[in-house]
Amino acid sequence: MMSETNTHITRRKLKTPRAAAIAGILFALLFGTGLVLIRISIPADPMAENAWLDTNSRTVALALNLIPYAGIAFLWFIGVIRDRLEDLEDRLFATVFLGSGLLFLALTFTGAALASGLLNSYVLAPNALLESGVFAYSRAVIYQTINVYAIRMAGVFMISLGTIWLRTGLMQRVWAFVTYTLALVLLVSIGYSLWVTLIFPSWVLAVSVYFLILNFRELRQDALNKI
Image (cartoon, rainbow, N blue to C red):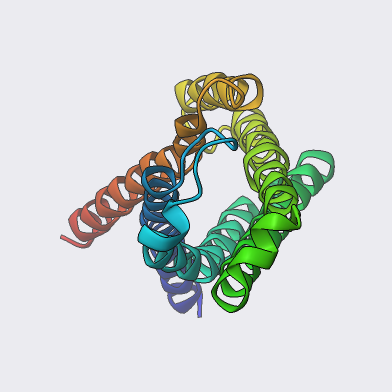
């Protein structure tokens, strides 16, 4: 019985970082790709010409279609991280961690849905949409929703998780300090360049790759212990 229990614990220990790594990598690739496609397709200046609606609308639509899949992967990433914390989970920071992650997803989904609706409306009535001012207003709302509120929630998510790592010792302290630094840049620099938003998926990718390395080390150590 004891042997079976130890085997179960070992397998669970090995699978948890791998699941988090896979989910994080999928999110980073999908969300990062979506952001890049949008950035290169839509002029940063809201007063710029709207010619991109005719030339780049398909690229933008492709980017928006990646968002739901990225969200599913991120939700899985959150769940696996919480599962890894187990009894070490601090209720205060765990609540902020979970709440900010879910708010980031909700705001990102809302912005993507609004953008998709705007593109579909342009196909049906392009002149009416542009002349009525609805397009300009909707674009401003979408910008605020995704690039201001959602990304700032991503920064809070990073800070809360970095604090949890620092308090529990589940990750090396350097990871927590790097996370704090990147989160601060994300929170205060979004108005200077929209490319700053790529910090979040890049951070998730780095953390996920590190989880994957930890998993390989644990597998190797487990194999050595059996010899």
